[in-house]
Length: 417
Image 1 (cartoon, one colour):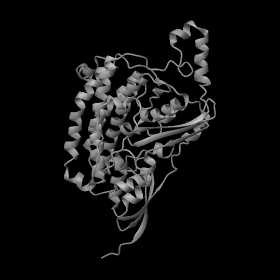
Image 2 (cartoon, one colour; image 1 turned 135 degrees about the vertical axis):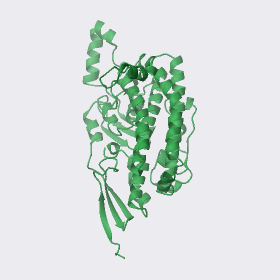
Image 3 (cartoon, one colour; image 1 turned 30 degrees about the vertical axis):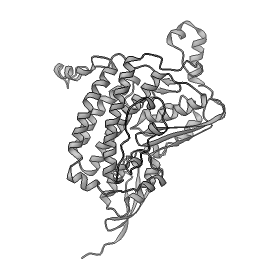
């Protein structure tokens, strides 16, 4: 029998299961991991430093590009921190729109996660199913902001604009005939709220499909059950948040424990795991998709029955209306001043956190009274999770490292910020 040697292996940085530019240095005993050392810095965007050179408004699109699977949730944490510094009141309708899009974003994130995680472990079909649903939700992003990914839709004091009264229609092309186009446009005849409501009715059945493919699949369970176990105590000690913490049995969710916007007016549950393994974290995220769908439903109902402004009336941060600009020179000057110089924020500091799909996403801003932050620090949820990789992977096989990276739901834009 050949002697098993200890050796060091580079996993990545361009590994098909590395979820970004992750270089993992694995110290192995045969195929068993003795140590997993994550190396970051291959992406490094410098977002926090760039924010010091930009006005408060110009940094909103930078937030989208942190965790590029949970775009609007990143924006939310940032604009909330600015609103705390300014003492801004956000109109109720804008709060409901924000919450609805936070949950649409959670679905976008978890759909990408379930597809990618299944692909990592060796299941192909789930990714194709999940992207079918993502397409509808991406259309909602596009309808409201003009961009499918980097929306820049949230603004200090509210949102960019109200929800459109008409969903964009698919047009006939060489690829699709008139009959196919008619079928695609069937649920796009009404407003955007009608389209989202139709999605919430269809979505639970889709989640059932994912569960049929995975939950009791014996290969899936063999790859996930008992892998990457984290005790409740260790999860707290390592700074885990979101599904990584709840999967270990800790019922902690900022939407319930430190409510923001209108979450305290909505009905939803916090799913938690029992064993703290990869399988529990999978079950928690699947249950979260169902809960997010339930929240979106409630938001749609409220928004349908309640009109109102979607931007603060505070003229310091709110842009002028197009009508006012065309009839009033002062309003026109204000518009140019707001978008070129930006608004000044009183000296002080503020921290705001949201329950991002991956955990607690927080933004800490220090202002010196200028039109741009003096300092900005982002608390990205994926960073502590990656730090816990060594502890989670020790004693497992190389193939299990892929499962553990998948269950952490890592996106490098926010880690290497």
